[in-house]
Image (cartoon, rainbow, N blue to C red):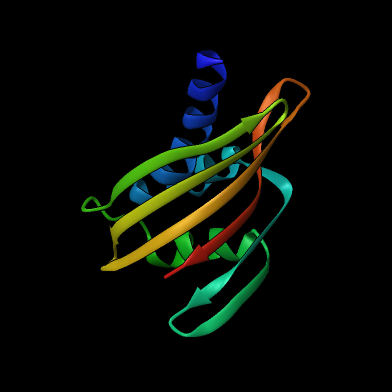
Length: 116
């Protein structure tokens, strides 16, 4: 089980490090190609395809002040839920809930729900 936790954390860190460095390709490695994202950004509903996240990273770029905390909330076979606190990304703070599925032996984020 420890191995599963480390694999999950490694995938989520691709997302975090991609945001921190502005590396969209690194972030994309963490997400399934059909992943979705929902939450409120600056009071407006941000909903739909994960490409919205990639576009934001492209637009804003990296931020070396970014800090994160990752908590694996549950792992049940091939499903997992993770909470990510992302702070100081361009002065913003996010709390994310990521759902992951292990597909063909590889963990992938399939949904991101967030609060800013």
